[in-house]
Amino acid sequence: NMLADGFEVGTSNANITVEQVTGWKFYLNEIDLDIEPEGENITISIQQKGNSPSNPIISHTIQGWNVSIEQITFKMDPGQIAQFTLNITPPNEGFAGEVGILNLRARDTDDSGLREATIPLRIAAIHDLQFNIEGEWIISENGGFPLAWIENNGNGISYVTVSIEGLPENWTIDGASDFAIAPGQKRGLELELIPSDWDGIPVRVEIIIATQEGMVISN
Image (cartoon, rainbow, N blue to C red; front, side, top):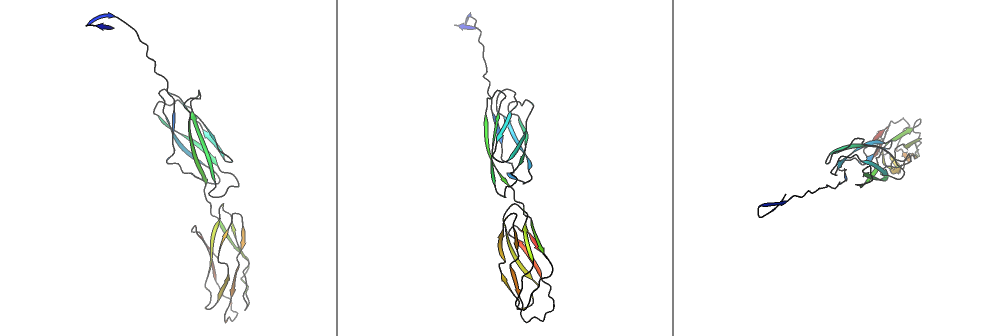
């Protein structure tokens, strides 16, 4: 109704239309970005930022990694938060620490409300060293090397320190006791024992392999 000086002078009708708003928001704060070499699932939360119910269409791009997405199939109310799962597998020949950039996109079914997020993923380190030795460590009065080697079956470089315990007094060790070994590499133990005043009686020693990552192997 329209009024003038307190009197009704006419009526009018008005139509009010609320414009539809669409939008999405990813929550990425609690994601573990280190992905195991054999692959794993990560869960991400997404919030509906529009003003009418809808469900997101989620897509991705990434170079060299295998990613599949479990889509949200129900309509989300404005303000609602839901979760979706990504199955992520790094490249087969990837090394520890190698990074892949995952680009996520969320949009409505009519392509409106586009939201993008960039997530740096990293291949988790797997430390797997194997120490092998064949037969006895044969030495003479001039010294001798063992038939022993280390294999790195992990996916990252390992920094190794070799020590020998139980040596008789005045015996010496010659050779490299600290070295790096690359993934897939086999390296011989290049340490020579040099005896002093030895009567030839067999001596038992312990070979200890330690890495910067805290792995210890003994034989």
